[in-house]
Image (cartoon, rainbow, N blue to C red; front, top):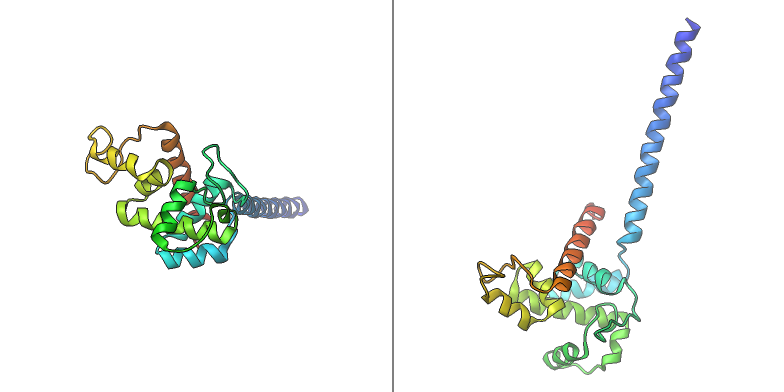
Length: 189
């Protein structure tokens, strides 16, 4: 009888260890995912996503993909700041907004996030479909407009079934994947 009790106790201990390991692994996984997909600069992301009527998740995903949340980031195309806006695009946005900032002001997180959100909102008004908005953010409105008119790249003039620039296709996939991960990680919020 003592051996049966001992085996039963061993089994219960084994189950407890398995449960602890499972939850420990889950906690470690969640912490890793939150580290990889942070919500840095949340006060600005929340403020400007709401102000411009765009998804916070889209804005976080663009920032993560563009700069990895590095406010001093500069791309090979000389796009700068968290949201990696080029000088030509920034000049256009400033003209539309009527505000008075310099290109270097995009190194300031709040200004970069504000204008990234503003730009995304303008693209969202024009294109509506998130993947198309993201493609236009990366490749430019003109390129995307021409792709949407070409039956090789779009069947309906709204959705891109095919993106002819591999860097842009890769970028869209990265942003959309980041969005999926942000939704999964922060679903309870």
